[in-house]
Structure formats: structure tokens, C-alpha cells
Length: 146
Image (cartoon, rainbow, N blue to C red):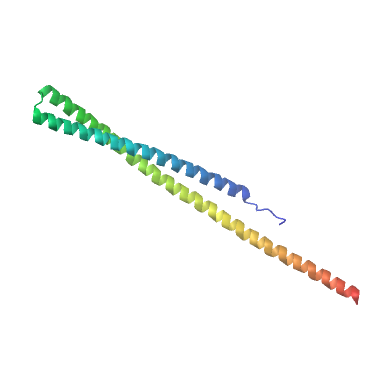
């Protein structure tokens, strides 16, 4: 092949963009997983606190302790709500990163297809040129033998 693929630099760039998109998606998935564990832990803590309060109410609790439990439960609920909002935001980020990765992969695939097409065309042209050269040689040899 005499002619290199002229868009190889662009194809390399598209590959780098796809790699970056993969890294961003992996990072956001990792953070999402960690946040989901935090949400689960926070829910478990809140449930435990509510169960303790219920148990203490059945066995007898001072008004001061009751207020402390309720304040603690309310704070846990607010923290849990904040984590859930963070998780929703991160979920949207994961979705966006998946879309970016799909687009980057599609862009790269289009260039790869173009490259394959150009290589096929070049091989066809090379074969035609080789056949024409061989035909010319055969004709010249045939004229000399007469």
C-alpha cells in the first residue's frame, strides 16, 4: 500500500476519547457503588435507631431521652435524604457517561469502517495496477518472441 490512511490521526484521537469515556464511566460507577453502600448503611443505622426508640418507649423512657432519640432520628433522616439526592445526581452522571461512551465508540467505529473501505479500495487499485503491469509485460514479451 503506497498510501497510508490519511485520517489515522483522527482515528487515534477517537480511540483516546473512547478510552477517556470508559475511564469516566468506570469512575462514576465506582463512586455510585460506594455511595449505594453508604445509603444502605445510613438506612440500617436509621432503622436501628427507630427500633431502639420503640423498644425504649415500651420499657419506659424519660422525656429528655425521647427528645434526644427524635433529634438523632431526624438528623439521620436528613443525612439519608442528602445521600439519596447525591445518589440520584450520580445516577444521572453515570447515565450521561454511558451515553458519551456509546457516542465515542460509534464515532470511532465509523472511522474504522471508513479506514477498512479505503484499504479495500486501495487493494483493489493495487491489484488492477499489478494486473495491468503484468498484461503489459506479457504483451511486450509476446511481441519480442514473434
